[in-house]
Length: 388
Image 1: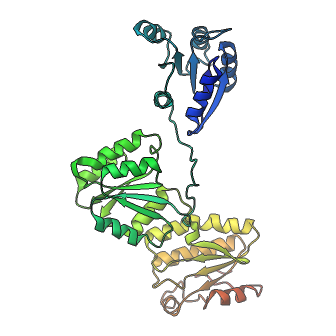
Image 2 (image 1 turned 30 degrees about the vertical axis):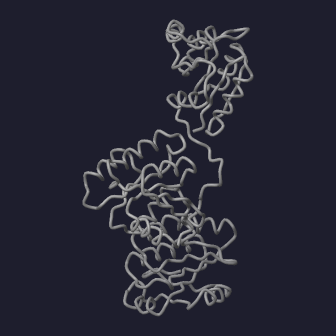
Image 3 (image 1 turned 120 degrees about the vertical axis):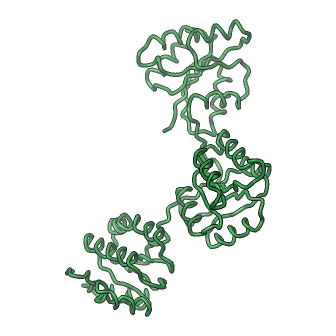
């Protein structure tokens, strides 16, 4: 949700300062030079917050605020007053007319943003390099861990990804890194001394730049109390030691909202290729299944009607894989797509040991599959007890 902020001030300079202060955030700014214009804009746009100057020509801030509070459609809009006068008496006067907060001019941009963030949930707009969107895009991950061997283990375990993994040992280094260039993901060890991990997490969540950055807690599997504390505080995920790299990679991709479909689905020439990796864990199969129907439908919509289901990298067959393959075949039939299977000798041999897969036929390679699919109509493998 993009918030709307209305600034009502006869000073163009103040309005420019306000607009500049909100530039890093996902906020739409509206402006008015006096109370009359302010009421008109408020009625038209229904802003989520109004920054209202007190002293203005035509209609001042107090009169505009009075009219706002008497309008059923506008009275609930929070207002922060801008005043050139400080002092206890003036503050009490402002408080009595029903405002959320006030600022004394001149004010610093960071003070304005801090006060406004108490009223609306400001979300930063990424103005740097584009954030990763696909599993194939680079992403920056910060590891906060005082044990170099763990940092090295994570870097080694994720070296096949395009992610840039940086490790630091202290809270101070972590704060410096996170504030200079916001990472896509932060992994922090709960074993840091003096509860530094929890202190660091609180600081991240109170900083507008890192408020929405996913933060993983890295903790020894037996430290149940620490895990519960991390969950209560709102860490994005828990990663236990010893680290299961496939779990970390999967959770990291999900937390960064990356499209992981390219692990399994790609367009190759004039056909769609569905490829399963060497190790098909339940998490891998679930991820592949999530994208199956949308990707096949997307291919048909783009004019592709041929599919290669490539399992030649798979080391061993099990029922989870068979179930996914049945789902892929049925989806092809539903979408009137031609398909063939590509396998290896081990998989072909294992298929003969299952009643449901005994009748499946395989090509030896992608090129062989392309040649087979080029000959229409294509004879497709049969599901047990069903016909094409």
